[in-house]
Image (cartoon, rainbow, N blue to C red):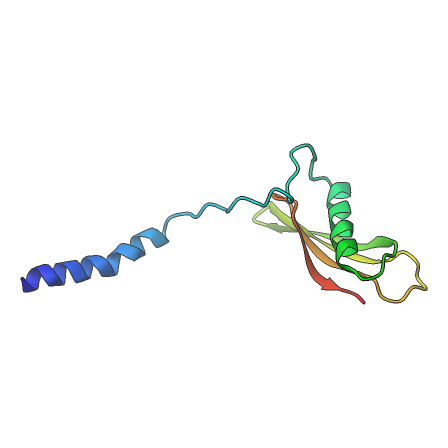
Length: 114
């Protein structure tokens, strides 16, 4: 009986560890992130970033791209960081920093400039 209990406890300790080495699949993106009809080119990525900032900002101002940086790991493109600023140089505030995932095309606002 004691050996059986020891065997069960040992099995429980090693059972969760077996699942850790398995590759995890990426959760599916929300439907509003992906559009099967669109290709994830730079113009579309910028438009997604501008729409995300425009939807979140209090005031509606024209935006332009200040910086566009592709992030790669092991030669695989992971996403793009887009820095947006007000198109009018005399405008105060506006714009932001946006991450756009290249696989799902989901924009994530990292910072809003107000």
